[in-house]
Length: 155
Image (cartoon, rainbow, N blue to C red; front, side, top):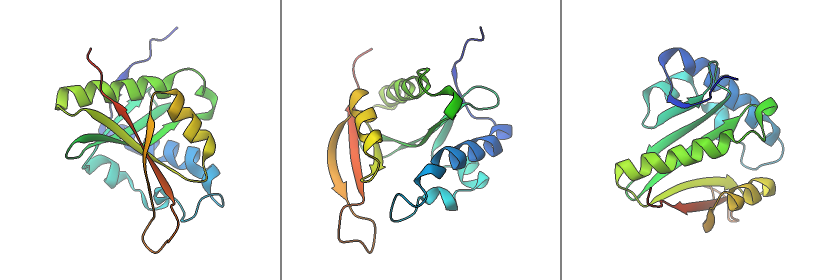
């Protein structure tokens, strides 16, 4: 059995990462409003930051983009290949995000998910995240996203 580890994405990974994210986020089309920003995501966006792209596998089976903000490490574009779901890869990436946050000196990891994606809400709650805020995209009067945070614990 091959040991799976979290690693920083290399230049040759970004095309596969983009395909993975677009494929695994495609179920949201027609479900969320406004449409996902993934439709505007490019290889250049992933490669040039401002976040760090981390992956598991070669080619990537799971990925996440981590961006340092003032007091949190923001976790975005978390995706796991459908055939790999249930194998703990999302947990590995989120635990790695916590390790990165600790090294960067912030006390929280944060992510957002859409109001309509109730399964995501339950998944993130099961992974130790708590809802902290509901926000609306520009032009919307109703909440469209939920922000979740998880405290960074001591090693």
